[in-house]
Amino acid sequence: MQHWNKNVSHSVGIFLLAFFISACSLIKSNNYANYNWVSPNGWGGGVFDVPTWFAPDMPYTGQEIIRFHDDFYEADKEGFWTYTFAMLIDQTKTPTTQDILDETHRYFVGLSRFAGGKKDADYPADKVIVKAVSDWKISADGKRRSQFYTLQTYDSFTSGKIIKLNMKVTSWLCSKTHRAFLYSFSLRETHHPLWKQLDKEATALQCS
Image (cartoon, rainbow, N blue to C red):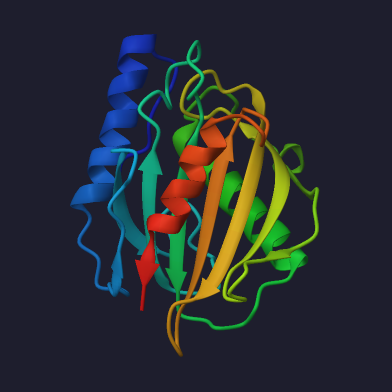
């Protein structure tokens, strides 16, 4: 993977995001592969190994599968910065809120510094802020746990400026050795119709 200089025009920025998505799809993964995720919304994305290249100090291994809303890059569209990704990792421990706070912070500091190029030379870690805004909710079958958060991070793919996202994390056991962590993000409030699309993506992911 090459580092990017993100002081570019809008059109070049679109190309760079497309490169990121394409690169994800082309990376050959040797990690966990017992899953099926056909996007019910027709969203594109990719697959790559965990730890990711931009957060190599993640304390587990597995795969990340990512799905982007078609308007992810378009700042004037409702789907701007709406996407979801799942980490299928080699642990079975039930996550705590603090686990999610720590790992989300690690991930987005790394992503900002990798994808952000020269927009902000430092991307200080203390500007990436994750907060829980709900208790854990258990699904009717008792298998899935979900919790809402807010995430302040950098719009590292376009402007480099601070953005504030709504975030939902859902976790469940895939098997005796692996657990799924599914993250959903949008600038839109959680009552917005986009969240129905995000929830469809979450339901569609199957692992074993």
